[in-house]
Length: 510
Image 1 (tube, rainbow, N blue to C red):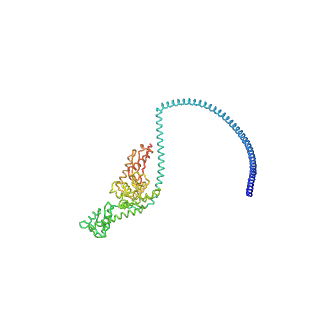
Image 2: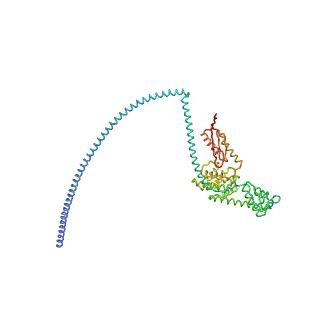
Image 3: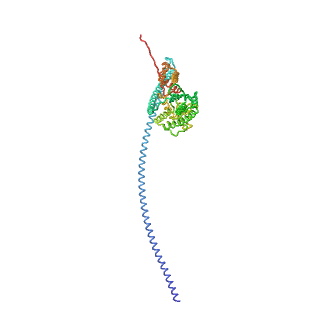
């Protein structure tokens, strides 16, 4: 028991001693750390103090440098300001001197102006006196003289203007003529077509004269049946082994020719057989019409035409105008139009199409009232729906105002095709009428003494009265006659108008 108590006492003392030792050890350690921290703080304070003193020194040095630079800059600026002030003072002095000089000149100019005003007044007075004297001498007032002078100037300017206009017109016309001549020559050289003259008669050969009697039949019943079925006149005369078919309708003439040829080959000729053969002939001609229309469209390279237009094209094979086959003419116009379009850079395809269809209205012009050009335009609008082609067809004869390039191309190609020698026939009556109309147009102008149409109506020569028409008036007269011919007459190609003015001076030596 005593031992346990002693043990606990010892343990307690040891614990108390350990606590005391630990306390003192922590105190010593804390003092050491405190001293270390104080030393570090002192070191840092010393370093900061040194750095601060260094920064203060550098700042002081920098401030000294800035102050020195500022003082130097201030001295330079003061020097520059002083120089500028001196220059401004010098300029001000010069301006003052110039101002004094200008004022002196103004005073001098004012004096001169007064002198000029006085001189002007004197000149005006002298001028009025001279005008008065001139009016007394000439017997004409100044207004009248001015009017006469202005009139003379106006006449002179009018003559000069007319001369200039004439020169410009001649130069431009020469250039246009050369270019047009080159294009037309190139186009015509590239075009070579056959010339076919259409007539109103067809001749069918017979194997023998005995066939004439069979065609006539008993009491003429066969020939009457054939004429009634075809609508033509059969001429059976003394011509050996031939029968002549006469009609103005080429389509009927072709039907009659085909039917008559079939009857001759078959040998059976009686009214019932005639009606049957005529019906077959009409079917064959319809097939031929469609074939010819397709061939024509294929020849010029026009694709996609409506079947009705193809049919109308084929009917043109049996239509003639002034003895010229209309289908051949349309093909020629299509080729010429395509070449003209190629020469001037226009649409070749549209030009060929418009040229091929421009006379399509002639296939039905005996059924529809109106000019064939407008009928053609209506048919094209109805079956092709091409406004450009329809407009060109409407314009090619002048019934409509020509405004499109395609219309000019088709009109030009149509004129070339129709005006070639041998392409068309013209009756003597129509020829004389055209000559008379040309001469009447020329004689309708004042100052014309005589007018003659020559060169088959290709040229009109006009003799004027020299006392009524001067040189400039002759030029104006030629232009006016050309304009009236273009507005009132229809003609192929072009007509040359020549105005001749002759002054004769006659005297006698005695």
